[in-house]
Amino acid sequence: MKKRNVLFLMVMSIIFLPLNVFAGSNDCVEIFGQNSQTLEFLQDVYGFMKFLVPIILLAMSIKDFATALSQQESSDLKKATNNLFQRIIISVLILLMPTILNFIFKLVGYSTCTL
Image (cartoon, rainbow, N blue to C red; front, side, top):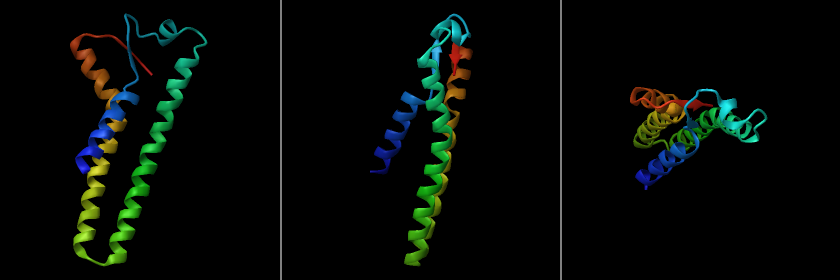
């Protein structure tokens, strides 16, 4: 079940976060047009994700630790701590995904318009 959740998170991050557009120019206005609603929408979605990911991380971790502390078992506390570290790593990867992809595409030789 956990592998399925991680896979779902990775697929969603690949779909929504790498907001790179392949083009011959790095000028986003040239690609999307001067008053493009698409460009504004993509920038808003990415900005929203920058705030949403840490909030979800914090809420899920608080829930796990509250449950572990209420049951007063050391194994539950260790499990909550492991979940916290895994979530932190996944959150950092999600937030850095556009930067990582842009770096990889520049190494390969593709030009991107990064939002």
